[in-house]
Length: 82
Image (cartoon, rainbow, N blue to C red; front, top):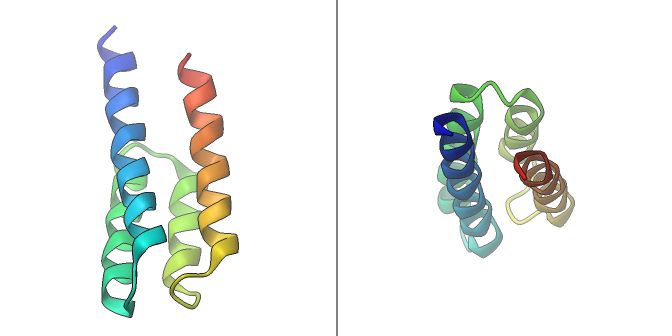
């Protein structure tokens, strides 16, 4: 039960960071959201999500392919919780 709650909280937090990435209008906001997402993913050993957050840090802010990839990863993680 506790593990499911932690995983749900992790996914909710990651979705908030994805939302911030998608709404970023400057390099600084994009970088902060990507770094937070990377740290969150690392703390839960979500390697694929961590790699995607690293990709966000290394691309142009607002890159839609990166946010779509992160969203797909989160959708898979959400499906595995249910």
